[in-house]
Image (spheres, rainbow, N blue to C red):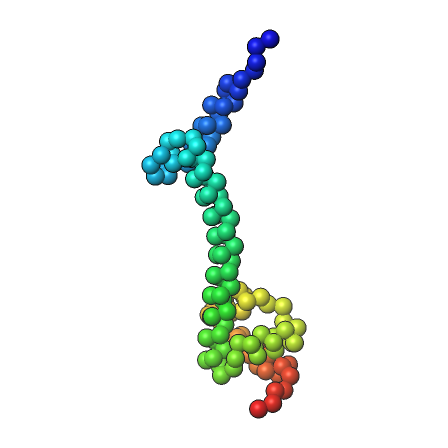
Amino acid sequence: MPRARKGAARTQSRRRLLREARGYFGTKHRHKQQAKVAVMRAGRKAFIDRRLRRRDFRALWITRITAACRMRSTRYSRFINGIQQAGVLLNRKMLSQIAIDDPKTFDRLVEMAGESAPATKG
């Protein structure tokens, strides 16, 4: 009995791989082995960068909230602590958006944070 070979499946897998590598430079979009390495590496980088994007956005929101707090002569850490003590369930993304779009509401949030924050010495 003759041995079975991959046949069409091998061609399909090669085509699929090269389609994913379309647009890559040099042999990375022409040769199967180079394309395989490039596609694996690109997937790994994409995975890492999705997490880095979340980190970058959180840093941006914190920077915006800090700037808004400084304009109202308070500190970011005191503001966040006071908001949590007051039981406000807004995340940093929403707080930064409020600071940009609705300053009056942010003023009220700063007041609430100041009232509910524990008294500090010094």
